Amino acid sequence: MARTAEIERKTAETDITLEIDLDGSGKSDINTGIGFFDHMLSAFARHGLFDLSVNVVGDTDVDGHHSVEDTGIVLGQAIAKALGNKKGIKRYGSSILPMDEALVLSAIDLCGRPYFEMDAEFTAPMVGAFDTQLVREFFYAVSYGAMMNLHLRVITGINDHHKIEAMFKAFARALDEATSIDSRIDGVLSTKGSL
Image 1 (tube, rainbow, N blue to C red):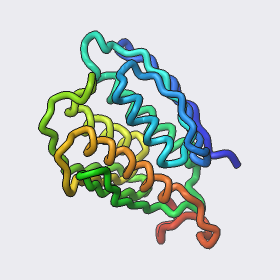
Image 2 (cartoon, helix red, strand yellow; image 1 turned 60 degrees about the horizontal axis):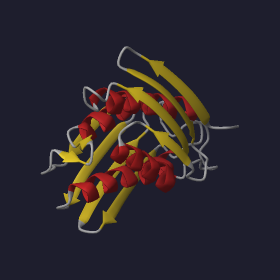
Image 3 (cartoon, helix red, strand yellow; image 1 turned 45 degrees about the vertical axis):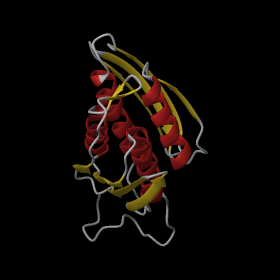
Image 4 (cartoon, helix red, strand yellow; image 1 turned 30 degrees about the horizontal axis):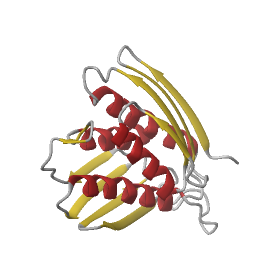
């Protein structure tokens, strides 16, 4: 059974179409209008081995906030939709990922209860045309859209590009683990019988 989803979301601020295949090979076609954000979503797809297509028309003449946050909402919703009833998934995933001097931890529980915790500081206001304040907005939106518990922590790091890229890659690897199927799991991995 294909674990894919397509979500369209249109508001007065953004028009977004997103497709994801959780069992892909890391192919991506990304166009958000924000170059560094495109780079991060491409890295997410590649390192999580997700096939991902994202097209965003947003009010970037104002700033990138609406485009980034709304993309996070849609990505989260697509992950939840592609997971369906969550039968057989490992549920938990984690990754500690280095990128040069940066070291990032990401941990996920696909429990159906949204919670987000992030411990990261950035010294530059922008990386390219991407506002570093939007890292938190994006991952918060993904976690609530997907109804997941997501923790992100920058353990070490100096360069903001490295820190942010390591966050996206660590998140991707943790999500790949959490969404993977384990044939030993009967139903869902919960004593309650539901996720």
